[in-house]
Image (cartoon, rainbow, N blue to C red; front, side):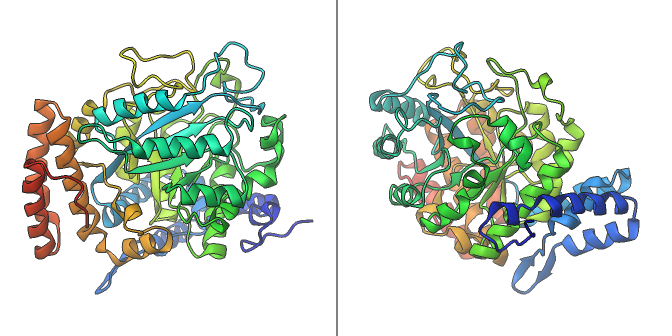
Length: 481
C-alpha cells in the first residue's frame, strides 16, 4: 500500500489516492463548519508589512473544504479574497500569448482528443520549417511576442530534434518590428536529457496537462500509446526540473473526472514540487473539455458549470497565490470576463488550434484540436481588456533576465513585481499600440498608459518608464526592467 508523501518521487505517493479520498471525506464533513471555513479564509488573507505582501496559501485539504462549501455568503467571501490576492501580486496586468500547433500526428489513443491515432476523419499535418516561418510572421504581424508550441506525441514524425529545430526557427524570425521573445512548450512527457535540450534551446515554461489525477480513469482514458504510463507522465515535471527547466506549468482537463478529486490532486502536485524543488508551478491552466472532431463532450459525465468553474479559479488563486493562472480561448468571452478578476493572469488571443492557419485569411477548422469559443482578433481582445481596466501585457522580461523559478517567486513575494512587471507591461503595450493596433485601440491604450504610469510605486522607475515610452514612439524597441 502506497503512503502519502509529498517529498516522494513516486507519483502514487505524492498524488496518493487514499489521501485524496480522505481529503474529500474531511471536506464533506466540514463543508458547513463556518468557524473552520472562516479560519481557513483568514489564514489565506494577504499580510502586509515593510517587506511587501505575504500570503501563506492553503493546503489541498484546506482548499478542498472551501470547494465543498455551498454557502453563498462564504463563496462570495472566497471570490473577494481571490480578487484581493490577484491584485496584490499581479495587479491589473494580463499577459497575452497564442498557441502554435506544429503537428497533429500522434500515436496515443486518448479518447477525449481528436488527434488520437484511430481517428481517420482528421487530416494529419506537420508544419515544415518554411511553413513555421510563415505562421510566425503572421503571428508577429498580429502583435504577438509569446507563443506556446503544441505537438502530438509521435517519435517518428515529431521527434525532439524537430521540436528543437522549430524553436530555433521561431526565435530566428524578425519581421518588421516583430519578434517572438518567449517560446513555451507543451509536448508529451519525455526524458531528463530531452528536457535539458529544451532548456538549452531557450524555452520559457514547459507545460504538461495531467488530464486527470485519478489513476484508474487515467488508464481508461489513455488505453494505448506511451501516454498510457500514468507514473511516467505524472513524474514528468520532476524530470523537467532535473533537466534544468525551473518554470513548469500544470493543468487538468476538467470534465474527465470528478472536479473535487482533480482539484485536490492538482494542489497536491503543486505541493510536491514545492517540497522537492523549493518552487511550485510557474503556471496552472484550467481547460474544460470542449467539442472537437470525433469528440462529443456530452459523452463525458463530469462536466462542470460556469459557477463551479469560477469557484475553482478563485480557490486556485487563494491556495497557490504566487502562481500564474492561464485561461484559453476554449472559454467564451463571457466566461473569461467572469474569471479574470478571480485570479487569471494569462490569456490567449486571436488563437487558432489547427495545425497552421495563422497565415490563412479564413480560419481553418479541419485540423482543430478543439472548438475555439472566443474567436475575436487579437486587437479586439486587447481593446476589450483595456475597456475592462486591465493592462494587456506582452512582457517576457523575467524569462530573458533570468528571473525564473524561485527567483521569480522571490520577486513576486517581495512585492517588487509592481516596480518591474507593471512598467514592462506598459512598455510592451506601447509597442503593440505603435506597431499593430487599430486607431480605436490605440486611442484607448494611450489613455490607459498615461493613467497607469501613476501606479508605478518608485518615482525613479516611473520617470525611466516615461522616457522609454517616448523612445518607443520614436522607433526604439525592447526595453525592460
